[in-house]
Image 1 (cartoon, rainbow, N blue to C red):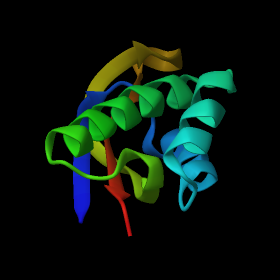
Image 2 (cartoon, one colour):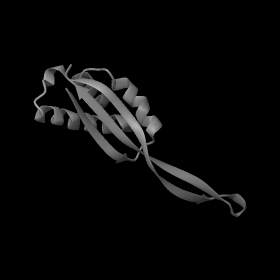
Image 3 (cartoon, one colour):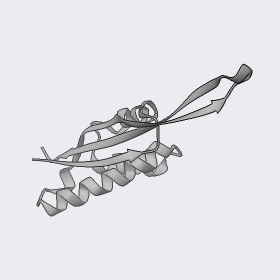
Image 4 (cartoon, rainbow, N blue to C red):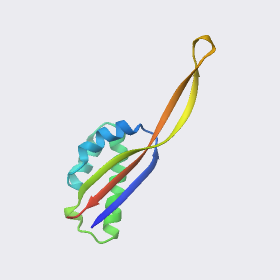
Length: 109
């Protein structure tokens, strides 16, 4: 059985989120949460929040909490905030503030 948790509109670039998601993918829940809480990266704290939400959903659906594994952890791109900064000779430079959607799938297989 699988349980999925999604955290949407997180203000971090998807590439930074994917770097951390590769670390926790395929690990047991307890080990993945320990890695996420120890790591100093912003993406780690956000993935820890999503992992806890997925575990709560697993407990709600009656899954065996001792055998939970992280099947997939993904940081998909979300919408972009587009801003402009003044540049030389009257030009404008584009600034893209990226957002992500974090998805964690836990399984008890």
